[in-house]
Length: 423
Image (tube, rainbow, N blue to C red; front, side, top):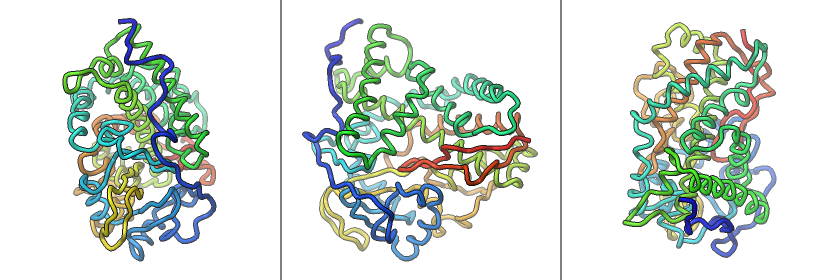
């Protein structure tokens, strides 16, 4: 196949377009009171959100802000879980909170199915992707992932200080996702730009925001056409040829699913690997125990995911309502902070501590409800292999400069600069 009329080369993204949604006023500046004026873009939140979340959980468990056109932030596990499971009153048609609200007509498909899809479409869209993320399918990728991790450490070249975020953590999911989608592995730097554009540029003016989204769409469309010209055995070709309800997928569904895999599949694992290495670098007792007891890593890994869960998802309120003591309006945003839920002392004993041998750990790092992460097996494999290889090759390491550590802003939180001293 060399031509497919579904994917015209001059097509435009069905994304953040003024004609198909509404923009709210951009409000910036430091936060006054986190209970009434929160912003997850603030440096204070990025650096350490946990004291803020603990304070809100005690005095205002469902915080509110006028920023982003109006948004709510529940911090108790029970509230986060209730919203995540309630698809009747909360829509997933947009899962990245920004100053743009897509039209209600975009539901039930959304911009990045299946994570942006509501029932009943969600079930069928998710089913299309399940086979690629089973334990068996993921296991086939482990040898190549392990070899790549070793090659990254080989490239350190005996340096005393390395940036574990930039030189190690970010590259692992980039390579895995590029291989799955059949994208050139050398395009990794573009992937990190797309992540930043989509997840951290939410307060940009509309024209800048649309331009950045368009750059991602243009890249994906170019990859689609490359696959149309040269079909191969990968997820992109699979999505192009997949059928739903007796017809091939619409272009927006194909590129939306590719966006989900590219953005969410990279930043979440990048952040989890980096946060885990950050914790072990500053907590020598945990690091030394894992080096001495490698069999404990699977348990410790779940605790690191709980304590440093990278992902916060968004929902949109469907209709005006009074919910758990607050008056929500139609199209208000909800920030589902799985990190806050994971540190709720009503749900977890010693919630604010990292207990690497915690036996009962039903954390929400991979989400809750119908949108629980479809790639959880893949993410766990990447995190486990990344830590196994690092601890095997570099058993002794510490933070080189605490003040030099930086964290991403927005809905996925992880180290972006993590200088570690080896030895």
